[in-house]
Length: 336
Image (cartoon, rainbow, N blue to C red; front, side, top):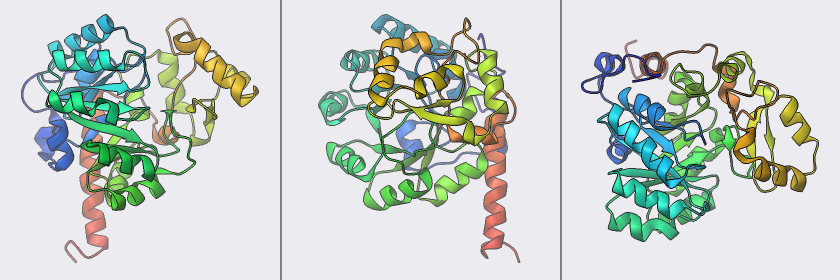
C-alpha cells in the first residue's frame, strides 16, 4: 500500500466510526459513505489516490485524461487492489479515447463515472446499456439543463474559483449552486472554493447534496505530487492563483515564473502553448516550484498543512457537525 496511511480495506475508518454515515441521493449514486468526491486531476489522481479517498469514506476517482488505455486499466486495477469500496473514473468527453475509457470502466466493473468537457448525450446510450450511473460537470445553468435532459444522474457545478480546468463563466460557486439547484430536479454537487468544513456546510446550505474537493486533497501525504507543490499550496493565499488560456482552455493555476510567462502571451498564443506543452509542463519530480504548472483553486488560502487523508476526513466530518450544531443554535434549532 505504497503512499497510503493506515486506511482500512474493510470496515470503518476512524472518521466513519466517530460520526456515522451521511446518506442522501448522492451517496446512493456514488456508493460512498460521505457525499464527498475527490476532484479528478490530470496525471495526479490515479489508482492509489482514488483508493485512499474511497477508503476514507469519500468517492475516489481515477482521472482518465492523458492516460493510455493500458495505463487507465492498470490504474483501475491498482485502485481495486487497495479498496473494496466504489472507485470512479473521470472521462473528458472531448478526448479522442473517451469511448475507450468508458469501455475500460465498464470492463473493470466501475459503477459510477463522471464526465466533463463535452456533451454527455453522446455517451448516454452506452452508459445506460451497461447500467452505470453518471455525474456530469457543468459551469452554467444551460449546461446543467442539457445534461439533465440527456439523462445524467447528477451534475457537478464548478464555480469560477475552482482549480484546474474551469468553465468560461466568471460566476462563483456561491452564486451558481443555488441557481442550478433551483433549476434541475437531479442532485447538484458543488465544486470550487471548498477547502474545509466551513465550505462543505456552506455548499449544503446553497442546495448542494455533495461537494467535490481538489486543492485540499493535493496537500495530503497520499497525493502523488512533488513536495514543492504541496509546500506551495500550504503557503499560498487565495490571490496567488490565476487563469491561463482564457479563450479555449481556461485553467486556474498557482502563480510562478513559468505561468507568468504564459500570462504575458495573447490568449490564442497561450492556448496553443498549453496544448503543445501538454504533460511536459505538469508537475513532475524533475521540475520545481518556478517551472511547473500547478493546477490550484482559490480555496488554497485555507490549506495550511500537509495531512494524511484520514485526518482530513476526520476534520471535515467532525467540524461540519460542530458548525451545523452551532448554526442550529443560532437559528433556533437547538437548545436555548
